[in-house]
Length: 275
Ligand SMILES: NC(=O)c1ccc[n+]([C@@H]2O[C@H](COP(=O)([O-])OP(=O)(O)OC[C@H]3O[C@@H](n4cnc5c(N)ncnc54)[C@H](OP(=O)(O)O)[C@@H]3O)[C@@H](O)[C@H]2O)c1
Image (cartoon, rainbow, N blue to C red):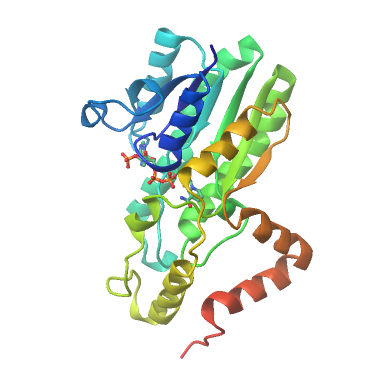
């Protein structure tokens, strides 16, 4: 029976992936920040392990427990992550450090801790859930998107480093998926928007643009696409999945960077000028 370690299975894409792999007969080890908060377990997961990416050393400890208790997983699905919204000028240094710790350094720690076992076994898949925002940058998501660009770079670098050892690397790039992540940082209305007043009209415009995206993929549909990507037995690296990912990347390729950015800027601002 193949084994997958999925980080962040409490909600959203991770939870749906746990159910998808579990129903296909995989042994799924899921991580949550506090297993005590999930006494009934998570559908599809054989076991739940604690992981808080914000805490250095948590990923290393997880890897040690998994290796000792279950052996080397066939697949690591680095899914857990956090979103951040607001003008970069208004994010604090602490917020940015936290964002990078969770979305980049914690993920690197987990990969590095599992790598020796995968390399020695000469097989395995490391699938990093990056984002469409790891290829395109959305205004006021620069902090968050930059972490996903970092994860894209990490994935491409690892693809080269691990190919000779039979370990395959995948970057899963979701567009818009209907999960709790958006509500964690984006208010329902224009009240309570982040950022100082100079940015306010633009932050408001971006919130409106984001709210206008109604055709989001369900986590279950996204999980289906993740399942196919992870099990396709190829050395393909990048998988744009879910709503808008493929069309936006195709538009960027077709228009070129500069024209795409000008077009997109016009779309979300409605061509507002600085007052
Ligand atoms: N939804 C989208 O449209 C979209 C688009 C592109 C990329 N993504 C990426 O997809 C992944 C899953 O996101 P989602 O949309 O499914 O969001 P979600 O429902 O908010 O799930 C995020 C998961 O990550 C966990 N997590 C957050 N901070 C953590 C930490 N410090 N340590 C350990 N686990 C932590 C959460 O656990 P708690 O419940 O404990 O917070 C939760 O299980 C993320 O990497 C996200 O960046 C999502």
